[in-house]
Length: 192
Image (cartoon, rainbow, N blue to C red; front, side):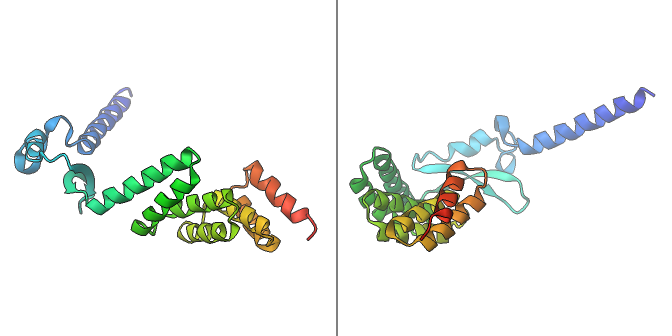
């Protein structure tokens, strides 16, 4: 009777070792390209401008490959990073300029539009805030904070109907958030 649990433990241990070995195939310089060690493979790449990037191959095993990062990608990240730093310091005018440059290089980044919307709200430029946040929502429709910010902008602009709609969407996305609930209930119960 004791032999069955021992066999099960041995089988599970063997399966674990096989899976672990495949998951960490490159650890300790093993299983490099064509029988070479990983260290030998890595020595041929001395360029500091290249970054290590994971690439999924057809056999679904993650392998290392070196891909030179395009200059445009670095510029996008640099503009966004500078804008984020200025935004965090509440230097909104400078941050706006950097975000506008970043959006030209990366027009599909919804976070840039969301940040621009907040900047415009701070500047009491509600029409531009609505436009920027709407663009952000088109790219990522299920972010509750963006619907909340859009509701707030619509309310300040005087469009209560749209404010209620987006407050409701924010509350539906995150029903446990008390701020969204209070905002939605407050807008819904106020007379027009």
